[in-house]
Length: 182
Ligand code: NI
Image (cartoon, rainbow, N blue to C red; front, side):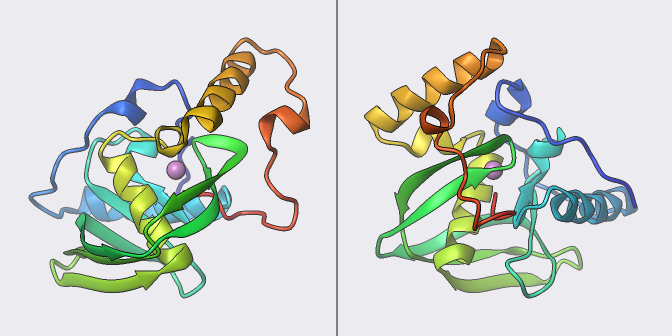
């Protein structure tokens, strides 16, 4: 197994809609294994194919119950509201309080072609919504309110220019929540 470099904010591959997967071949299975390895190495709890530069609708996740792979996933139902300090492996070190539905029902298929149908809440539900956003070319910064987004863009611009960013400006991730990025 190998690990990939995770693409980061500013890479155009993160802004494109990934394509449906028609066939599962050995190459795709290897990609899934390498994505799981990359996710653990990061460390994170979810990783979508565009984050390793592959425009296919596949993501991997593990919220503590072992790794899973989902292809062509979509949210069939969602309910409630939940606020979570949401970070992304493609925007390392930063996170924002983001409100999204608390529970979702995810449907898709796995690598064996079997149907996936999962009722998820809280972190797992957040993970599913975040990864599907990646497949649609949407980053967490697009889920922020106007004030959060202005601040996020200012910090990301400074970072891109190689300027130092003070911790308070960047809302650095909480030290007690390592490896929770999506
Ligand atoms: Ni992400």
